[in-house]
Each structure stands twice: as C-alpha cells, then as structure tokens.
Length: 142
Length: 83
Image 1: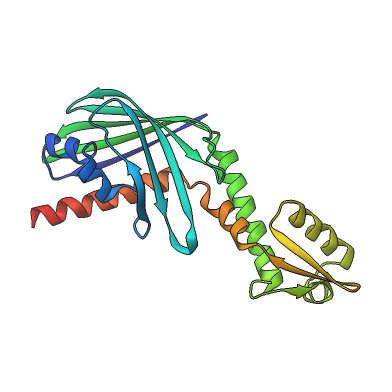
Image 2 (image 1 turned 30 degrees about the horizontal axis):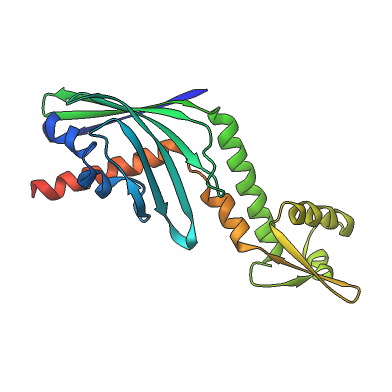
C-alpha cells in the first residue's frame, strides 16, 4: 500500500475553498482531467453517503469511480472512500481520500491525501508494461 | 493492423521476430480477446478488437495525475471568479 499527497495554494478564503471541494455545483466544474467530460455523477461531499462519477474521454474512453463520504468537518476536512470500476462495473480496490483545508497568509491551502493505494510501483509497472506492449504491437502492425 | 485486417503472412514479413514467435503472440492476444481471427481457406486474417483495447486504456488512471488535473481546473475556476 502506498499514499499520495498533493498540495495547492489558492488565493481564496478557507470557506470558499471548502465549498469548492464539497458543493455539487462547484465539484462538477473541476472534477477530473481537462479534456475529459463529466458524465453521470453524484458528487455531494456536503453530507455523508454514497458518491459516484463517470468520466468520458477521447476515443470512447470511459472511467467510473465511486465511494462513500465517511467524515465531515466543515470547513476543515472531508473524507471519502474511492474505487475505480472495471469494464464490467465491478468495484476494484478501495482507497481513502481526505481533503484538508488550511488557512494561509494569503488564502487557503488544499491538501489531498490519497491513502491505501495498491502498490503504486506494481500498478504503474503493470500500466507501463501494458502500454509498452501495446506500443510495440501497434508499431508491428502499422 | 491499426488500419484494418491483415493476413498472418504479412504480419510475419513486417515483424523482426520469427513466424512461430508471432504465432505465439497472436494466440495470447486472441485468448485475451484483444484481437480476432478469421479463416479464409488456409489463410488466417487478424484484426484488432477496438472495444477491448479501449477497455484496457479506460479502466483506471494514475491518481496523482487525476488530482493534479483537478487542482489545475480549480485554479482556473477561482481565477475566473476573481476577474
């Protein structure tokens, strides 16, 4: 198991930042990578309970993830579980995400802790392995 | 094969590995459902199953990449608001 931590400073108040990472209207505006479209979703981190989201990318690429909001401490933190669904909609390994908001001199900081990830090296190794396999295959068949 | 169906013989002549090695690779890919085979007389033709390739690519993504992208968009959202 491994953990990932990301931090970012924003020039807004802690309350605004907390709202942006918990309100459905705000979440739907930034959830997921640029260039991918948010599909069906329940993104409401203002109350305990289930959430899910589907994200559509280029070339019909679709990803789905879901979990439960497990802890709420406005305007400081929110915690939820996370798992990707596979192509048969089966829920995979469950990990844990916490958003923590800290007031700073000129705004607020968002800390994202993504814990209990499956061995990242193995996961990335698999994905790299597959990618390079498929690249080789693609080159072979060009 | 990226552009359509290919005969087994063409795959062998294009590749830098031996015919039997190609056959083994094709069998693994076919068993995994990534490619499909069609027979016409004694010839074998192979083509990619795009939906299977997409399933592999679309299953998951790096978590850090996911959050990084989200933080960038959140940044842009606040910048818009503050204008």
